[in-house]
Image (cartoon, helix red, strand yellow):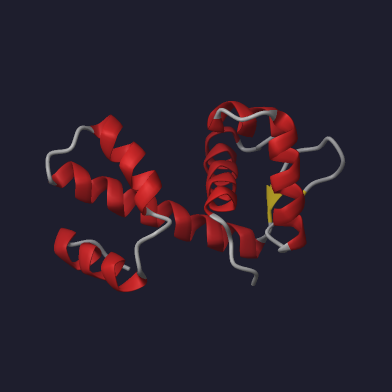
Length: 123
């Protein structure tokens, strides 16, 4: 698989969360959730389609492929782990969520494993 950018990870995570919450994800909802313009979402979806992570009919809902769901769950799990870790340190929920979003893209697998062990989480 091509290396995903931080931005594409944010898009696939958002599509996954929206599909869990609303049973579907459309360009407008993704744009609103991420605070970006709809053409940015269209471009990202095009890239994710090329990577085999999403399917979308023209102007239709964005659907994660099996591979896309696996990648999205991995990204969301990293975010959730880091947010819980920061909250355990006493960071407020709002800041922990924001910082976890930044950290999830740059920490090594080794560091994430150590945080998971430290917090008592599972793989």
